Image (cartoon, rainbow, N blue to C red; front, top):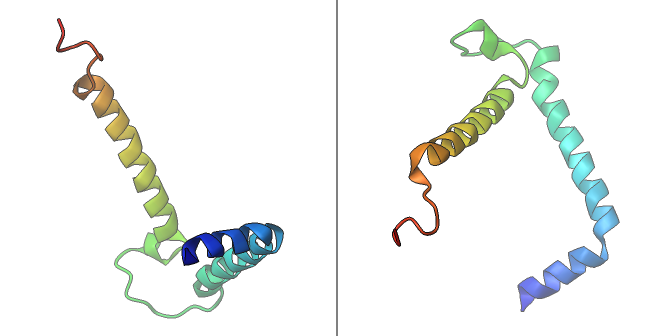
Length: 87
């Protein structure tokens, strides 16, 4: 029942909660961009890894690629019609 009360509490305060989430998102972007402004010698293996947000973009692109390949693979042969076994 505590979870239900928490959800109702948050639902009643939705607009301030959304504003807080935007502020946190902005802070995360600033923290991620800090290495771009304050250059520290890191342990990156390649030059592209030194770009701010590289691993975030890489993760997003990899996730989209996994989804697209999975959909293609599913439509290529794994998915069957509903009445496939009835025939």
